[in-house]
Length: 330
Image 1 (cartoon, one colour):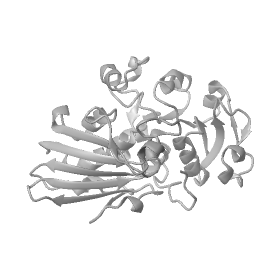
Image 2 (cartoon, rainbow, N blue to C red):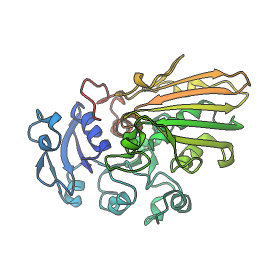
Image 3 (cartoon, rainbow, N blue to C red):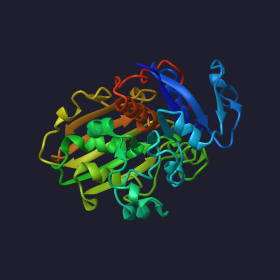
Image 4 (cartoon, one colour):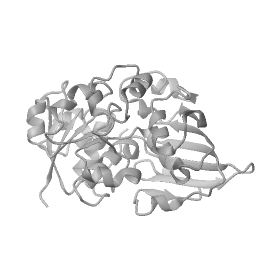
């Protein structure tokens, strides 16, 4: 097959550079544009010296109309709100995979409640974008030209709970993320100096990823306690879930999904720098299920899943570009 012409808008953030790492080893990809307003004309090797062996790639501020016209797919690695401002430049002109939360939710009211900003394109919610979680929506992703990539906490917790969908009375989840989940800009409470030698929870039962979890789990808001937490490490998320249910886990929901592994024991270091999510399930002393899961927040929690979605959209092997032998950053 001919190469897929790929562009990345917002390439210099953590998820953008991690995405680029995937694309550079993808056999079916041709990099068309790497876009950043702040670094127009800068060679890639100057911004990222670890990629100094990559000749001929530069970051530009190419206009969106040109990017859309000359790309088969565009990844939008932009912050919330910024993405909804530029999406009309691409929608219907090329395939889109959006990393922000701007089009993950189905209604404006929920979005504005959790993100505290107005949504400019209510008409694009509730159906125009497909939620990009391959283990649940693979068939819909294959038919779509616009994908909303999941949040990292949301992706892990949704897959952790998926074997019990519709059969849970209650779930309590504590998920500890590395500091890279907050992005490159220094930002309390996820800035690394605040977390060195420390663990702290934030936005308990009010985290932005909560409505994503509720949408696929079959739980109502009052049936879920979610304590997002930041730990003193860079990459990865480790989650403990305590699930009140009489059901045994239906692990067949992960059949034919290459990046989910069921383990006796889960350790975060076993998934960091990979696109795998590891899960385990044990019946506890009180009858509850103790569920554990781990993933790399920048890779499986963001850029790796985005590449999975691209592969599905173009009908190629879902694992293409996601078998790693290159260094990770951070």
